[in-house]
Image 1 (cartoon, rainbow over the protein chains, first blue to last red):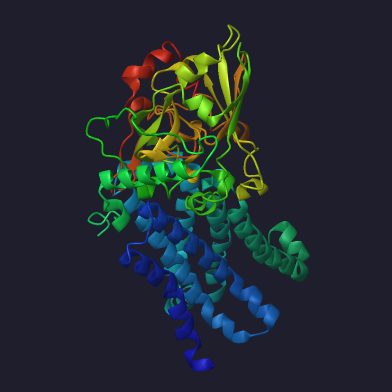
Image 2 (image 1 turned 180 degrees about the vertical axis):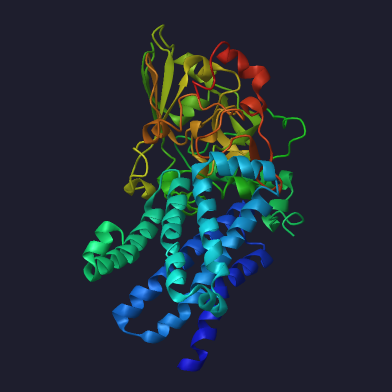
Length: 200
Length: 305
């Protein structure tokens, strides 16, 4: 069980990219291929973000310690898909029209929020190595990596705001996120009620 | 790679004439088999149309598989999967009511037959930022409406789409306030560009494109061109469309294509023509300004979005 565990999840994480490449190869990206690619990558960025956020709760519910070893990889996969999503938006959709990109970021709130989400994830990816954890010290590192909570919220809101009328899909993501963050909040409150209320 | 291969499929490279002939042959065959009232419209002998300068019609495959028709699902490919076979387009009746001298209940054939069918090759710009060029087949709405003799009180025309949960699986989810309704000012409805369409690419409308009878208003965002019409009502007051009800801040009554007035959540300055890689600039009134700008003379188009 132990040996193939991580490589297996690593391979699974590449499946969406492989699937997209296959669809491209078969010329099966639909009538609006750029939209298809961009949505697909955005979907998987959000899914991996939620999967990464689920590692700790699921590990504690199942008492299955080895799950912890997947957390970094899944978090980096989330960042990987966020980067691909950004690349497809800037490179395919806008075709490197930086002026339009800048206007979009300033004016369109869902793009502003998506961009903030990306910016929040950059330092987390940058400090994901063992050396960085040692250099920062565990406590500061954990503080920094709490940024993943607002990033998750921004990702869901970004998706929600993009939808025209049918909010059922973003609602599912929002509920999953609420469970994952709510569990943490309840746990933190139980351990240290005063700390949660006073923000310590 | 995406530039070189804009998603062409074998069906899209079928010679256009061969495609049309095949459709006409099928329609004629079906009509001859069925006794009684004609169940298929007679589309033969329509007046050919010309594409706008420099425009090429979007392949039929794209026009019929990438649709916004929420009554059959909110994903673009759902109408093509859910509507054909489910949407019963014969017999089809349209109720005409409100401020007019000759209201009534008309069969599809009675609406269309008195007029000569025309092909109109129009740009279609969706509010979502993509566009197509579609060869519609239909009759000028103005000529049809004139037959009902709107009274002096008639200032607007209100249209309603069929809302039958038996035929339309999307209606079960309340993503919009069903039935889908839209409206035009009477002069917009009477404008010679405004078309009551019954077909595209020389054949009857596919179900997913709003069969058997839909509106085409080429200088407005696509959602104004209401599909599968079952009621037309002349009114004195401005109708509230489904999208205005869903989000009044984002969707106005006029919804004219206007690159200078952004949708609150996305820019309307550019659009992606389906089949093309780079975005192109969106034209004022979708390029029909010469014909329709006069309708809005003196109006603040930012306030009346």
